[in-house]
Image (cartoon, rainbow, N blue to C red; front, side, top):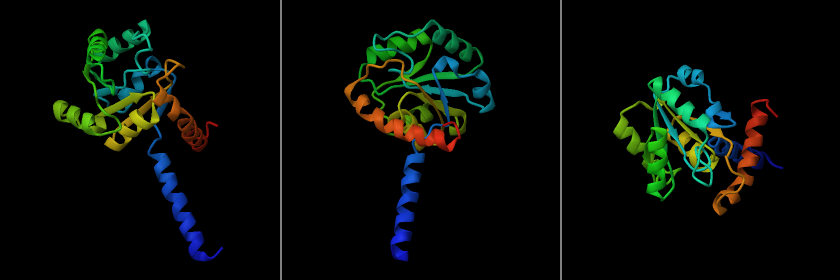
Length: 186
């Protein structure tokens, strides 16, 4: 292989690594209620953004008592909570947000930055004080990373998922395996 070809291949590998890293979360937890308040405090977070489906609620639109208590405790510490959902079902998002004491935006079109920018404009909180929490690398984490905020990946609540999510999960597993290997956790 000549030198030009080697350099071209090295450049391609570098670009691919950069792309893959754009899907890496800042942190990973099993579920929202396992995220320690100390982590939020250490990162000086003032606003937590949440995906809704499979992050906060299951397929039956229910959430755990532990999640409700966790949200209540975080709010007591002065942290604002906001659902940023791709769901087109405004009534469901509104209901869950109200029950959990959160503000909300639906039809967010993540990973588009549109929803993030609307919240930033509304809340006027610096990006370094905002964190996104979700269960999908290609919407929640990539969107948060593109927006320039810290991100937390949680495991999906349900095994049974929408068709589009099922298609993406094998690719997410590849990226997560690479991420965990880099962090020395694999």
